[in-house]
Picture 1 (cartoon, one colour):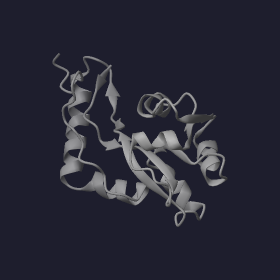
Picture 2: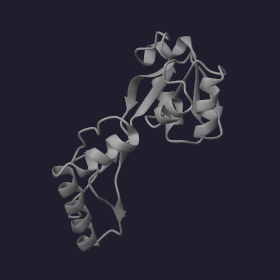
Picture 3: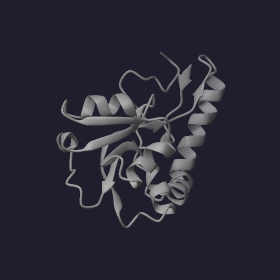
Picture 4: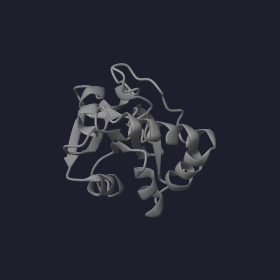
Length: 162
């Protein structure tokens, strides 16, 4: 398969009560942290958190967010979009995004060797980035500004020429 340049990102983020003193990975060891079992977030948390961190794993995103809101855990690691759920459930005054732990870029993929589709999608992403369409859609649906996305990444060929 061949990757197209990223069109979006979904930052891997720590969420907690506003008064929780969590500013970086080292602070996670002082709290019980929830994460979605089997997700991309689980190995990121395992790598980022100090060995002393108590990690509780939940079956899906909804259960992970609910664990935070019900006090089963002190913080959670997951998608930036968890903030949408926190807001819609009326808890945005109590909880906040603490910091970004890792990037999580989204991009399309095409069959390796399909240079026509790769060129079409790459052009689409570039044009919709240049005219602001992707930024507006991201702000509308995610509620924050879209990150500046890379057009090159180590070890990933976006050109189809390698």
